[in-house]
Image (cartoon, rainbow, N blue to C red; front, side):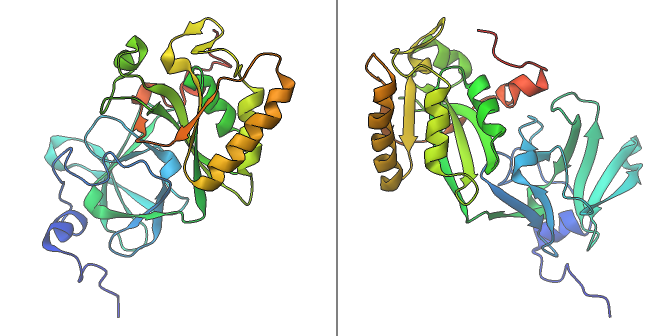
Length: 280
């Protein structure tokens, strides 16, 4: 007997997953969700997408530029007078959404447009967070993305006085946010102290609100700690690093606050634009 994966779904979920419906844009719980973990099929619970493939396309639905190998089945969809490619769960054949190419939003040039009601998020419990500000966040993101054990790195803003700041507001200095990279890492593969060493080696922590020609409070050197253990290790590391600098280290060590993910065009900026550095 074939298992009915749809029997326990709510009417709203069944409308999407079984009857190939579509939820209204900007209403799904995962549209603005960017934590580290895995997205599974809401009906049969097989893994579909990893969160390091998720991006903000601005379309109003969760967007991914790649699937877990073998997780997705594609069908030609001629409904609505258009030719589209429908995507379904490879195990239960539940409807997820549609996939589009040629939009030039990410390096992979692919957008899986998925209904939130078709998926469920499961966080990776073994991952820890770290947040660093070391000047222009484009180069800092690229630096940490290339480290084994770093699962997810996103650029954004932290430590300011306003909610949901824009890049323009942050650059004006009026919001008091720092440009930061928010990192999820596996401590069994890379230690927090290793990340700290990388932070110190790749910027000048003795210049106040400045890295090279970039000047402003958004470029300040800052470490946002996420727990007391990180605070202790950061303060010890700062004392040790001071021996390598003639001038006083001015890096702030402050508790982490709300992280505001930057606009999508800033994410993975250097790789998307085939740049090796910021060119500052």
